[in-house]
Amino acid sequence: MGLVTAGQAKALSGDITIPKTCDATAATGWTKVGNVWGTTPSWITSRLGRGLGEQFGQRTRWYNVRGGYPLDGRRRLVELFEAAARHDCKVIVSSWEYQQSPSFADTDTWHRALADVPGPDRAEAVAEALAALLDFLTERGLADRVAYVEVHNEVDNCSLVPADGTAGHYARLHGPLERAVELLRARHPTIPATHSLGEPWPGELDDLPEQAQIAHFHFYVYGVLGALYEAAGLGHGTEAAPETAAWPTPELAAMLRPDAPAFTDHQPDEPWRLAATGIPRELFYAHDWVDPDRWDLWLYENYAAHRQDTRLSCPRVLEVRLDGHGVAYEGGVDELLEADDESTSYDEVVGDTDGDRLPGRLVGRGVAGEDDDVLTVDDVGVVVGGPAVPVLAESFHDVGGDAVGGPVRAGEGEAGHLRPLHVGGEGGP
Image 1 (cartoon, rainbow, N blue to C red):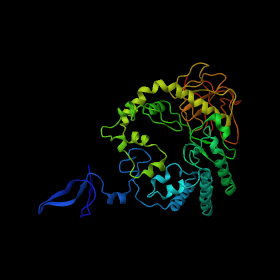
Image 2: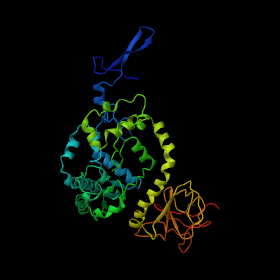
Image 3: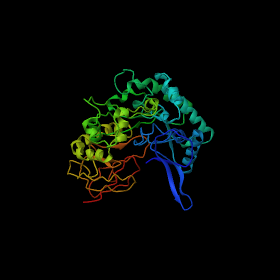
């Protein structure tokens, strides 16, 4: 289907597949009402915008935007924070400048300016800009709506601090993040400052600077999705793409739409836009041209083989989260229980957790354990092999099912507390 227009009678660039769109009238029989093009003419795309390209990225969520309009960033910022004040909300202030933001701009000026900043200095440069943003909000009486400020989103998975050959995932970040967080804390001491991490590596947390005031980790458990990425010859997070004899791999080729172009032909309209995203072209090709039903079918058919690996990977990260960021424990995280798991006597503590997020609600199935405690984090029950008690001044769950704080057992309930950790009791025999 082409693009129908009602103007521009002159000769125009674009592949004209139907020269006229007509309508019948009693008086004249046929009247031209517009032109139809098989590809969008350049004079239209220059007005509408095209995102990363006319086709490139247009079936990939997040990047499937057209643009073509100016934005007053400061006005929008004020509107956001005024809305937050009206609704009594808080806003996390962050930056994505070294992780795709410039790719949406009209020209490469922003992207080139960021790339020109020496790698070791980028975190401080972003922190300086964020401090100025906080100055702007403070002058307008809106800084109280800031929950905290983070130097950048996923500092380990972007070009904020480029890889320099240093071993490990975090070690290269230490100096630049230390200076950046110190700058933010000095400029705005009443607003907590931190950085965001895309992947938690428990054994490397000591490589991070101590200045951060908030622990902000993104918790990705790829499981069967990681297996699909490997079969498709794709990397994810800090996991590099596997070496393959050919790409697309046979597995990915079998999932592509029939109208998928050759990989070599699928390019952004302007090469700098791909560089500004930090995303490999292979990933765009897969997401733009895969058949979603075939993609999902592979996940369904292969989930069983990866379910246990997924279940075992969660406790390793949650154990660190519970130990260092909210709950002191003894014995560690024993197991994760998904919402369809049945409880077994003394072995697992809870099944069918329901994972209610409101205080005072009940766990949906039997609670059988004697000595273990259960924490629910969203829809997953976490079995903690020892007493869990709250630390810091936060409203964490005390894991108690009775007045003396014993474990929740069958037939018991407890008052409950607000998220992030809450166990309400037991709601069935």
